Length: 325
Image (cartoon, rainbow, N blue to C red; front, side):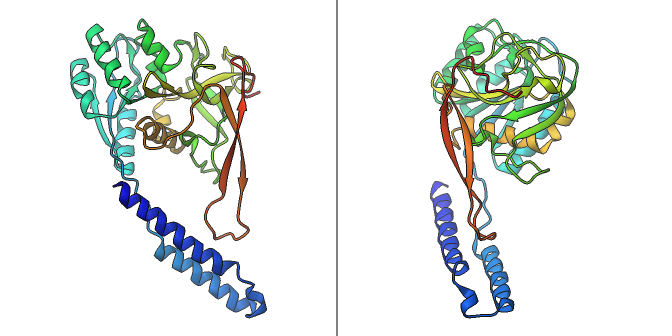
């Protein structure tokens, strides 16, 4: 599988190099504008024929756990449907269970666990130990929405997920600001702009936490508390983050209360990327001590490969006010 992906990348690079060389020739010295337009059209046709369509082939299987002993979200079936469709579209296996014993028995067959709106105590002491051992062996975890309201009496789990639920205001629209637009989890195109997502206005149930994950997790996105009422974290309200922790990888997405969230393309992109990152498919620096800014450099030829993103690492304090204002 890896050899196939390497060959595809080499073919793409080779074809683009050839096309780039043709496109930068001083054609106006030799041919008129009409012929030049025809040549450009030919280049575009050749590109569509020569460049292989990328197929995202994964070696990961995802185990989705949605058991609840506390509040039960009615959006869990919508989440199941979304994860089923994402798995089919992006070529990773998905298994669902709400049985704790089955969950533990299935762990060795999976590389990533997703807690889909789990609440309350869902694992006993021996099951907690088994899950911890599985995770510490280089595995991945993705928590969705109420996952931070599960296993709240287990300190290791709370540390792994990054924050503990404390409450929420009524469902309402708020603006999400993406702080790290370089991390692969946030590599999602906004359909409204055609650009990588920077701000996202979304109706959901927005959680407050007993303490901010800032300082121990790498914050990917924050809520702008000026755009809704009931926030409790001021200028720095994390709502999506990730971290390398205790031998594994953990990501959390605070959205996911409403059915509509699971059919939203942006959320689907974030969830897919979080699963791939947690499964080790797309490595990235998730150091909690740094955030990033981005800049973009583009070729002047509009038909050449996409713009190249570069990142600048910036040190931040654990009480950073780098959030939305």
